[in-house]
Image (tube, rainbow, N blue to C red; front, side, top):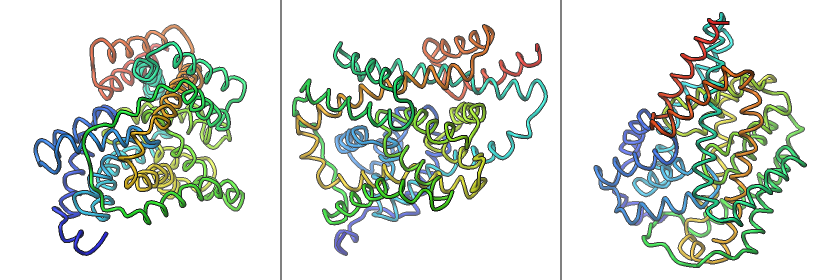
Length: 401
């Protein structure tokens, strides 16, 4: 960014921090709801940019892997106040929920008694309803025809044969290839235009760093547990297509299967993450804090949080100068359609294991999960409200024995 461009930036990092801190404290309901809060606060009320420019930015971030709402926030902060604004937006939007989940991680182990353990079990049960809602909504949007529904089923079959991170990568790659073979991309450009202070040189460097870390971190993971943790969370953040809930099976494969986090602690934290505002990716802060091996606690939370967000931001920076031309390519659109269909299958597989198998042990648990699902789908109760219902219901089941 040149000095002349910097002089024309319309806001300050402090202004961006204040706006996004408000959003970080009040934005409940997941990434789609977050984008609505962003539009109301920054487009309608503050008039930082036009509706067309905002729609263009949202389209870009939904197209890329990573946490869409956080990527939109990062880009909006950059538009308003350059690189300091981007950092301010990320910190302010992420910090509230990360701190709450860190406190929960530090205190959950001390919860005891029938009511306390029942409430924690309720947090595992509510994850069944929330993931089921996510699978249903994503399937309707991303698998609207027989061919893409078949891609989702094939992704589940691949994971049954090859569970774990390798199977997930394979499913996404296979889905992308199948999408390319279907050739459903139209090449129709999307309206709107966003100007960002990112040069092509900076963009290329960001993509090189992204690819370099993805390739080198697995080789360095054996040099220490901190590097192994960073590698696991970085890889999970790099493969999230289709929404924040998709991070669930990726993180489960990275931290539960190696024995770093117990299945019960994983599902309880995921349930708690639904009750806080801000990005779902802050679930990583909870996981980093409860890791069995060191680093854990505050250090583990900081490593996990930085690692899971970093790849999405690097990719966003890397494509900003090329977005207008890339998004109009039929090949690119076809690849993403297939990959997104595979993502539905990956999340559907996670709904079965570990979510359902880890939370539902009898008909009473299933009844509570079903009630939470109906509250979400039919009564339109916000997720944080359903989490409270599940925790209270779980405590009641615990008291009943």
